[in-house]
Amino acid sequence: MKHYLANLDPTVRSMALLRFLSASIEMTAAILMLVFNDVRKAVLINSLLAIVGPIIFLLTMTIGIFQIAEQLSYAKLIFIAIGAAFILIGIYK
Image 1 (cartoon, one colour):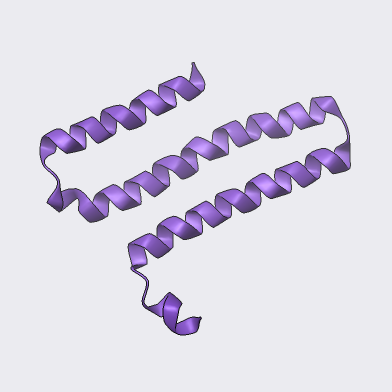
Image 2 (cartoon, rainbow, N blue to C red; image 1 turned 90 degrees about the vertical axis):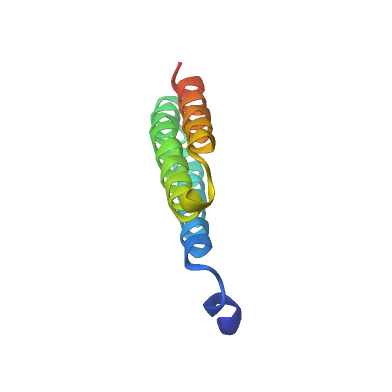
């Protein structure tokens, strides 16, 4: 297993680690909701997750885009940026 992890692309490894971080935050939030057993506190915890999710998304996309930016045309980079903006607008509106 150690040799497999050493052969992974550092960019892919960083992106995966961010997703693992996001998953652990989500699991912790779910456990806290069960522990508190209160709808108001559960809504508060859920609202915090609405902030964390897009941040992890943007960080993961940024890492990936920086790695492949030299292989993409400016038009494709603009389309990716517009797509990410639409996702964020859809989340927050």
